[in-house]
Length: 263
View 1: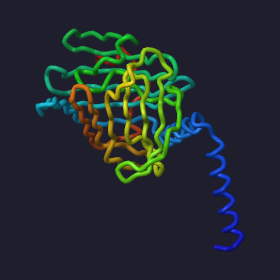
View 2: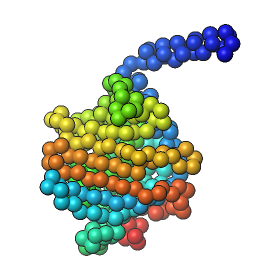
View 3: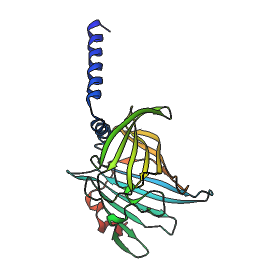
View 4: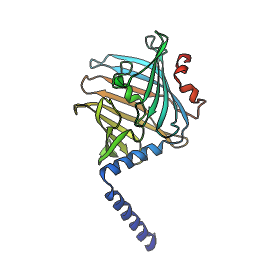
């Protein structure tokens, strides 16, 4: 490296360091969340089949098969649209959840119950309730859209051999079941690796760990295993994903409440 290049590189590093130091914790927290959001942009549509395993403290387990279809967000103030449909076992077969994620407004969610052959809207007062008996709440199923939280950078530290930026995310929407969430983003490919959920009393309620990330064509990263642990009940829900498909034949009509009954 020439003396000029070395000097330029050194000056650039100092400039970037100064820029980071000049940010407030809130500005830096938002920048980290934005970096994660941008890293996933442009996939259009996706579909994946997965297995959900529910485990109680005694080790008893129940397994479910399902699929998640996603339509990427369109327009200001809107987030991704997702449909989650269950294939088995028989007691949940055909159950489907449609989510229209919003930024500040409450997410729109509809649940189709095949036993009743009807679709009902999930009220904002029930978003913190468990989704089909799992450790995931209805609000966990909705996308973590940029601007949905108030962000504060806490620290950068090593977790499981990776450097991670830790950001406190406080829900900016009403009636959340959480007072705050500590969000861990790796500093290499900018993906979310861990979420620590705190209830309205400030108690550490749940932890979600995302593992086995794989990069797909187009630079899209997806975890193939997610584990949600409830520290109060000792229960756990594990999601194990198959291969993700992108650019699948889906459009906005597939993400309307009327479409749930056709699934």
